[in-house]
Image (cartoon, rainbow, N blue to C red; front, side, top):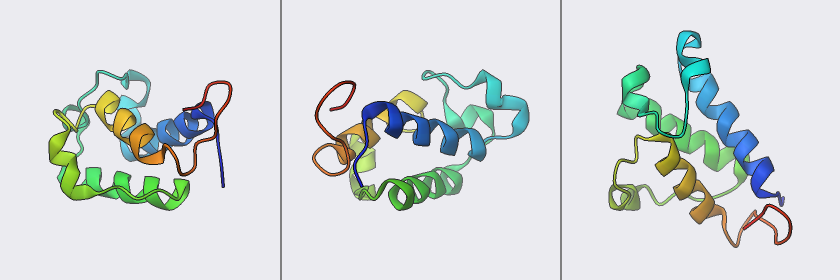
Length: 96
């Protein structure tokens, strides 16, 4: 499976939206700390596992601590892009 960055982001956004309570879904931005919208560490790991399954990428969980503020949407998105680079992302328009 290969995808563009836009396709990866669409999957990422859907998974994040599904994980938060409906009352927060329209308030999620890249600056949102997922702990502030009711998620806990277990839910964050579930998000990562779902991203792994749906995108076919491996998240080295032990390296998450290297990402400052990994509970923030933009940090998770950046990590997702990094782990997908060279695996599922294709070169070309709007891809890594």
